[in-house]
Image (cartoon, rainbow, N blue to C red; front, side, top):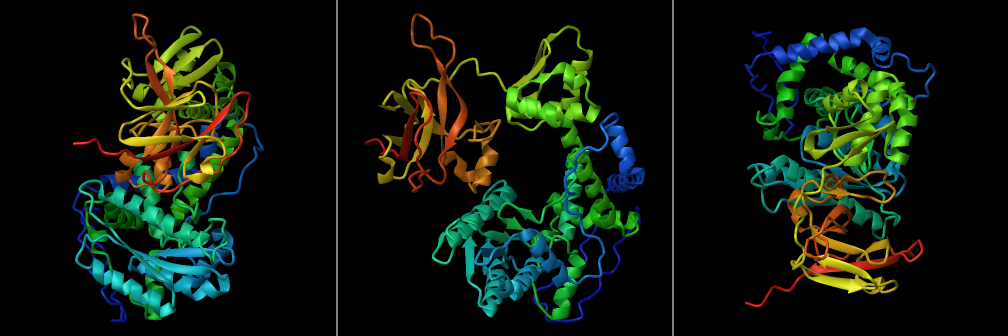
Length: 562
C-alpha cells in the first residue's frame, strides 16, 4: 500500500469541454493504516451478514417483527444509461407535480451541468417550471467566468437564470456559513416562485441538487469516521424536504462519460482539490484506496451495508416501540420493563429518554454508562451525571432524565423595559421595541402570535443564545434552536439578530422579602427573518379556561439621544 499510485486517468476524447482540468491530483503520503482498517472492517462486517448482526444485537427479540420498506440502496454498477437512472429517480422519489417550480442549483461543474441538461430536456414532459440558480462566492478568480458560463447554459434552453453573490466572505467557518447562505437563498427563491402568479399558492416547490453516487459514498464514509450507530449507517436520500437528488444513483464516471458523449462542456472548481477539507481528502485519498482494496466493489459493499442497516433500524424501532412510546407519553421508563428487553432495545429506549429530556445528541458511550448503572447500581434511588450538565436519575421503578440545572445566579432583568396588556407582561432587551396586540388587532400589523397563555404570564424577549432549546408545537420534546433556525434558512451570522421569546419562571428568592428572582426556560417562539421584516403567524382563538392570546410586534428600538 505504501507504494500505491493512482492509475492514469483517461484523457477526454473531445476538446470541447471548456475549462476542464484532467490532471490527477497528488496523493497524500500519510500512513494508509486507517484506510486499510476501514477496508478490513467493511469486508469483515459484510462477510458476517445480516443474520449474524441481527443475532448479536437483538438476541431474544421476537420473531416476525414488523418492518418498513428498506432505505434506497447506494448505486452499484449498472448497464442502464444516465437518462434512464435520472428518469427513474424523478418518477419514483421526486414527487414533482405539474406546475411545480424546480430550482436547479448549478455551479458549472460536471455534476450540476449534467443535472441542468437532463432537467431541461424533461421539463416539458414533467410540466414543471425549471429555474437555474447559481451562487457566486467571489472566493476564486474564476467565479465570474463560472457565473457567465452557467447563465449561457440557462439561456440556451430558455430557462430563467438567477444569480446570488456573497456580500462578504466570512473570516471563519466559511463552509458552514456559506452552506447556510445557499440553503436560505434557494428556499426563499422556491417559496417566492411557488407563491407567485404562476404557482399553486401552497408554497410547494423543489430544489434540485447534483449529488451523485460517489457523493453518497463519501457521505457514508464521513459518518463512519465520525461515529454512527450501526442501524443508522446510511448516506443521502433522493428526497429530503424540498431538496431532490435525481442523480444520486448515478456514478460520477457515468456522468462525465455521458457529458463527453453528448459533447457538453463543464468547468472544474479548483477548490475541490484542496486538501484542507476532510471530504476532499476522503474523495482524493480514501475512496481510491478502498476501491483498490475491495477489488472495485466499494459501492456494492456499502450498498449491502446500508440495506442491512435499514433492516436493523426497522427491527430495533419495532421492538423498542412500547418503551419509546412510554418515554414520549410519560417522560420516564419502567426499570423492570427496560431490563426485560434485549440489549439493542434497551439502548434505543435510553437514547430516546435522554434525547427527549435534554434536546441534545447523546453518544453511544453515554447510553452504555446509563445501562451499566441501571444493571449494577445498588438501591432503587440514584443520580448519574452525564456531559453538558445532564443527569439521569432513578426513583423506585422509574428512570428519568433531566437537562442542565439552572445557573446558580440567574440573570437580572430588573432594568430591562417591559410592556403589559391583559395580565400578560413582556420583559424585552433594550435593543428592541415591543408592541402587544390583542385578538383581532393582528391584522393591522405583522406580528408573532402566542396562544394559550395563562393570566399572569411573564415573557422574556431576548437575543438567541448558544445552547437554547425550543418547544415546537406538536413535538414531544424540545429541539435545539440552532438546528431549527438552520432549517428555517437563517444563516449563522444572522442568529444574533434573532429575537426569541421564553417564559420567565421564579427561581428561589432574593431575600429580605424582595420579589423572587426569575430565569427563563425553553424558547417558545423565534421570530423568523430580520427584525422589522413583515411576518405574521395566522391567528386562532385561544383554548382553555382563562387562556389568552397575544401578538408581539417587534422592531428596532430608537437609538438613545446623544
